[in-house]
Length: 349
Ligand code: DOR
Ligand code: ZN
Image 1 (cartoon, rainbow, N blue to C red):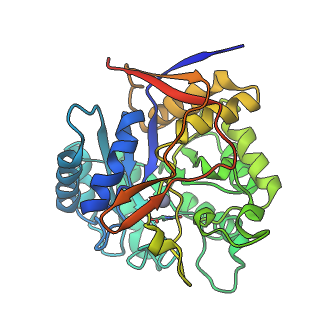
Image 2 (cartoon, protein in one colour; image 1 turned 60 degrees about the horizontal axis):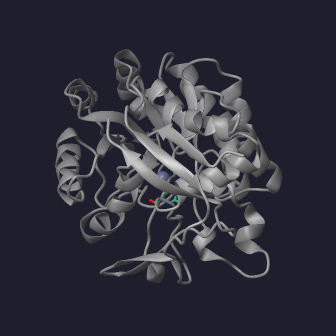
């Protein structure tokens, strides 16, 4: 039986690092296991211009632990006022790797997102022209649509028409949670991929709601029925190049999560790689973990895979249940089992 697994160092293609004290508290967990990450721009206020992204990037680099080998891949938050020329300049200088679309009101800090898609047509056309990917939070915000249906309805009502209006636009469906999301990606040969989170490979909606409400499992898009979790597992472990890891690790302090209207987000950065090794082994797909975590993402973004490596070794190790921040603890995602693997080494290139 395999006792040790060495991968090209993984990247995280969807990550929330926040800012200030929270950034300093959570960044070491990602920098320990990942060489690069696509950094979500939903700060308050959001990262909307090239100069916002440059300043945020500087703050991230300043918060890195001494000697860390980690590159933040910056994104801009798409608003109805986004200037195509600013996006193009930020891309041309190598500052940004993607633009993020939040439908207005869909999730945490999405109030500045897009309500009227006709107003972003020019930016999207520019992005298609220069080959800059659009990362999409794929949920409709219509209050009449049941929260468990919002991803599937988004694909039909918003995403598919948008892709037809902007041929050639590279789109990443972020954190897919449904079999409809998997099927939509599989039905489209080019210019479309999806990230899958660690937690959506582990939990279904029962984990959140059955036998008591578990706020630490509440995230957006919310976990769906078991059949959808199974579809995600099959996609992630298939080796199909259109599916890759985006943890959506989204730290909130316990006081922010444990209240009558708690925040959405699971903090998975510290134990993602151990959990993934456990899951891929369970599914007889350890040989596909490198594709999912380290190869498929760079290929879609047109970047080389990392030359350095990360080694996982069989055997469990304690993961801290939380990390401390000055505003309170941030609870680490509990997969409900003890991962049978741990990260044991990381080489530089
Ligand atoms: O669960 C989530 N948390 N989903 C998102 O889309 C946003 C994120 C956050 O920023 O907390
Ligand atoms: Zn996110």
